[in-house]
Length: 231
Image (tube, rainbow, N blue to C red; front, side):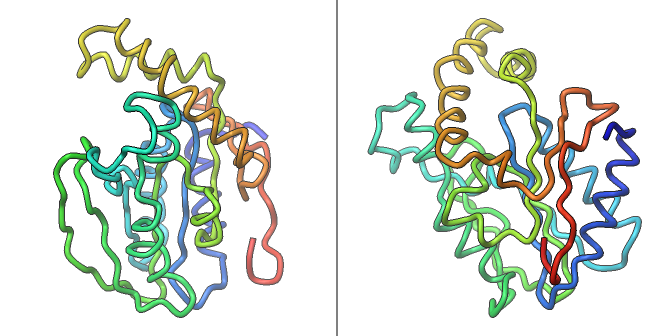
């Protein structure tokens, strides 16, 4: 169904708050590059804070990249290098998600690397309460080693043409030109993300699927009901 953006945010927050868990609630917002993941995560965290006094933890998975010098299995700049090697999946699981899950010690990190993947960052260890809510955004969040550790998986759908258009506009500011940004999307980001779509089928596996082509009026394509205490 089509909703206003604020209606969608309010509904998502209510669904998250209704999850009956005895550990922190881990929400992952997944999707193509330029799908609007970070914007939605920021807005959702704000909406949650307006609705509850529970701690809301906001984390960007881009802070869990693998150092560029360790991405050596595939050629630099290849789609495979992006999909298989960009993110430190073990660190995402072991330093962030598992500690917040069942049986976890609640001691987690928010970042281990800068956005460029060249400078390690030690965020220090934070301690979460059992009623905390994690809102994280990033790519490839439903890889097999990560998917079981999310309590709610939200996938944002946009078309490949939207990825190219939005990504070019966004990234030309830090690249040499709009054409250089477009080439990067055509040769690297889009084919790398197509590897993910072909292997994982994240849109089909997500708990909530949102058509985010229209920021002002997103369309909720699927919203699975809570069953037996879990989605």
